[in-house]
Length: 291
Image 1 (cartoon, rainbow, N blue to C red):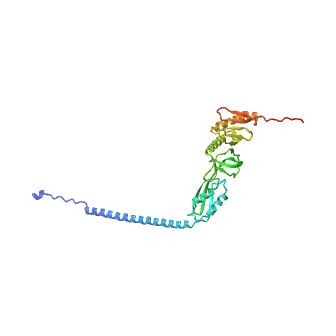
Image 2 (image 1 turned 180 degrees about the vertical axis):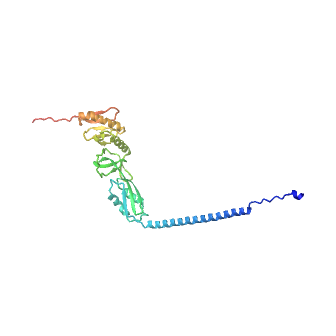
Image 3 (image 1 turned 90 degrees about the horizontal axis):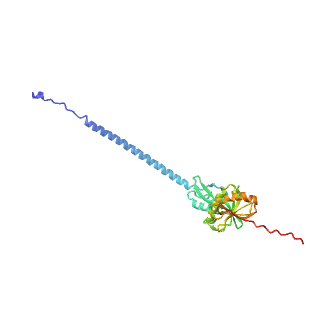
């Protein structure tokens, strides 16, 4: 009876825990071996690449030390001739390219008056390339009877080339200084005046075809001249040249062209909405006396 009431349930065993642990260990162990091998391979490849780069750099360095300056290429020059550059740069030909002092070379060529700036680069084939920025003349300066070119920064330059269009002459220059580059330079106040006058003159309808000279003068008395008339057209030193040149055009068209080019000694354009003139004095004509 007791024996029949007692049932011995079959024992549930875990699903092969040992086998599961073994599989995990085997899996972990297998991935660890693979990962370690891959890391070592990448490290070896990386070190080989570094070694190759170092070797190439060493070879390139040795090769560069043997390269000498074979020639020069000048870009951007239109006023300065190549021969003038070569005259100052030929002393550097044959020097070691790597040890070439570009500062010394630039200092040598910057002695050329028309050169405003330069950029110097070395090329691996032994060529030194010079990119130049020239000074561009904007007017002609009359100084002690000598004609000089004048650039936009006020530097006086030797006249080298004829321009297709005639340039405005600047006279009455009295304030000059010597700049660091050895060139003479106008006073900054005169440079500002000339720049503003040239800008407004270039935008006129036809005054730019008539006005051929600007004479600098103190006391707000700067005046301009034309080739057709001896009259001094006073524009002053205080700017506002757009309005003054417009009045010049109106006066020229309505008065000068009708009354005559020699009718006026001065025409003052400085006052707003007014023009003051001084007529030319009639010369004394000698009488015909019979002896």
